[in-house]
Image (cartoon, rainbow, N blue to C red; front, top):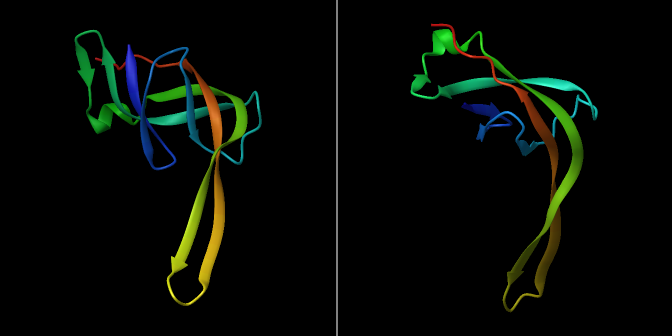
Amino acid sequence: MYAIVRSGGRQHKVAVGDIVEVDKISTAKVGDTVELSTLLVVDGDAVTSDPWVLDGIKVTAEIVDHHKGAKIDILRYKNKTGYRRRQGHRQQYTAIKVTGIPAAAK
């Protein structure tokens, strides 16, 4: 059984026990439980994609860690003018462990 969930503007395929990196959930602390909205649930041959049914299904996950991703270097340069700008960015992520995917009601 697996589900497609939405978190932080992205969609992730998850199953129970998976550890997934999502954009930082700033309101949650390590050990807290969060609920993710479900877009699709696949249970064997049964595929549930009806939004009316999926409104009641929330995937539960536990916060494992908050960390930063790899550094991205941003360089801007214009020739013949001496214009140079250097900037870096590290995206903040939250690692979550999926603890439960409820079955869709038939």
